[in-house]
Image (cartoon, rainbow, N blue to C red; front, side):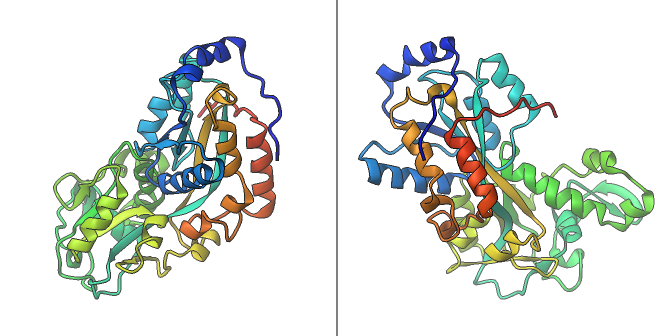
Length: 346
């Protein structure tokens, strides 16, 4: 693959050239903690192949990464941000305000939002989405009333579950993993409740009333570093954790996945969509920085390589579920040619 000449505004290129070429010789990357291990793997391969300095990769969370990425162009701003959801219209508006308008979006593959527990926990975990909602939501139905969540033990939700305290470690509100978990697990789990179905509540009601995680103790915000959740699960066999599948995949010696609706999180179940909580992963690159920031073109080329993205590639070995051949080829052509994304309107 080769890069075609990118159409970059003269002012944008001048702004970058005046600062970045002289002041920064390392690629700067921010964003999702879920995408972080994949980008880190590409960074290591890029450095090994080229002898260039390894890019600086910071795990800031998807929302935090978007804010930093969209603040402007030039050496003081990152070249790429990773995301565990698509860019929002509100984030694109900030990009536009700051002149960050020539951006390429890359959907690199898929990931499962895994619940996991220590292998020292001998319970055969299998939760429904409605049980997950009842354990973690700020408000739930009790005896026909919508009230603050009273449940402190799993057995209070269903007698087949352990008589242990509910302790679930998960991401903060700035995380794309949190956004995806709320949308794919909490909203769907809420919709499955008899109270919601019999009440005839629509999606707007669910979004307004079922999006808040509880703040009274059972749900613990563990920051943007998913490795800290892994460490906590090692030390507390009764705690559950929420993170991207790659972190479960890399720690299967110590952790086991929690089945959801009878389905175990695996590469195969995420790929065939039988695992109910899966989402796409992205990165975004500033085309104004290509050809100006040293090594950025080559780094993007490595990220788009078959060695990285194809089935059996080094990213799938770390838990990424690859795109099919047709979608992957379209992605590679579009990203390598620097095709700008369309404005986000919703």
